[in-house]
Image (cartoon, rainbow, N blue to C red; front, side):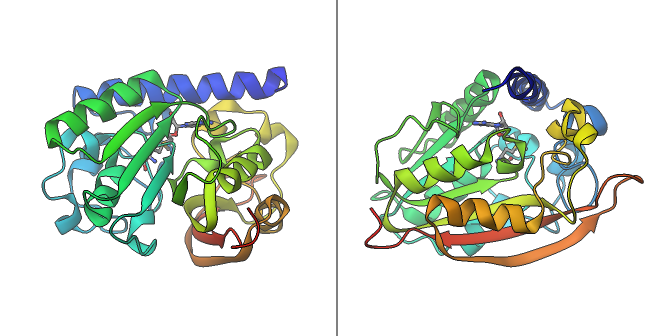
Length: 268
Ligand SMILES: C[S@@+](CC[C@H](N)C(=O)[O-])C[C@H]1O[C@@H](n2cnc3c(N)ncnc32)[C@H](O)[C@@H]1O
């Protein structure tokens, strides 16, 4: 990893560590400083998180979840809503944050299934584990690690999900490779993520604040799809797109997307 990449990652870690600590205390966040997807369809602050997410989660999904899990939510989609999770499946959530999507997945896969939340930020992990304890769930665990180097064996999960995290990685080829590696043959990837509606200028790519806000790390469509194909994924599709979040002049707009891709049965 280059120094620039390491600096961006550290900034992202600091930013989401702060978000976790504030969510744990249910403190209102500064939208620009603390949120990933400030504005548009994404969650922005704790107050917004505590209300219904009209675009992301149904009220019925949020019912019964610890308020701190909802408060920490910083996604740009609802990956479990379209992942078609079945009882008994093994699910990995890349960048699980306070655990909201893991808890929703856990309900769907049931006690014979298993959900792993992976996150690199210690404060997020602590919050997610506390939330799991509050819920008393036995089929979810949270592990520390980076999605560019996932600490799990090959072919060990059936589904990889992620919610507004891949765009935060400075090495997205490694993320695609690792997601492919840990998926069992025939496994599927369901990403909610941000995509840029044009190439991102170099100076913006070097702005850690914009990166941590899920703007300047966003790939354009062609690059996004090429990375997944390059890792070996097949039947890659963008199944939902929009609305776009307008950016200031000099930056392409970014849009929240839902992406699905499959690891071939014979590709293990
Ligand atoms: C925008 S938040 C999304 C959290 C969660 N998916 C949600 O929807 O609320 C990004 C999360 O990804 C984690 N993260 C960012 N980059 C990561 C990486 N390279 N490896 C693992 N976790 C990462 C952050 O610590 C943070 O918890």
